[in-house]
Amino acid sequence: MRKPGLFVAILALVVLPPRDARSAALQIDPVGGQPVDPNYGDQAERERQDRRRQEQDERNAADPCELGSCGDFEGLQSRGIPDTRIVAVLHRVELDDDVLTVRLRFHNDGAEPARISIDPTSPENAFLLRVGEEEHGILRNGDGELEAKEPLDVEIKPGKMETWWAKFPAPPAGTRRFDLEIPPVATFRDVRLDD
Image 1 (cartoon, rainbow, N blue to C red):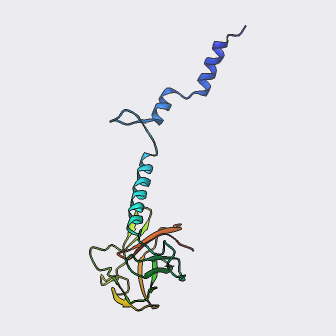
Image 2: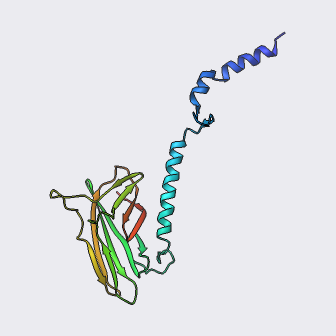
Image 3: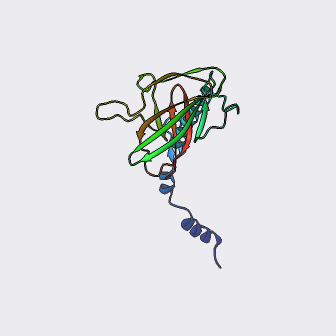
């Protein structure tokens, strides 16, 4: 007659990994003594990104485009500039070898002239192209000058527009989306990059 205890013991040896293998896969927090989630670093990074996006959303809360009051402008994305009737339109992105050129248009959608100021040379304003956690500033030429249109400080008449462009390092191969921050005007999020 067979003994059921022997069968269970053999089955446990075959099914369960050795105790050392189970404990090696489990990390213990040295401070709290609790098991650590192996994805904790990724989770913390996602939380930081979510916080940063929430802060940007709060800054752009007064965006009239989000309220549906902007016109229908041709481009990839549009953002209303708070406290004005100017609409910033990310008109086009061009990827050429290792350079990404962004082209913006600023439309005055109001009945009165409105002023816009963009100064990428200002040390307080970081014009950034973001891909994940990587941030890239505007490229510089051999003389150290920014590869961008001159700073803008113009008054745009009603119904008229002004253009501006800048060149950034191309995002890594395989990148499908990026964020573009043009202070103090707008942040364009999840801009699609087509081949």
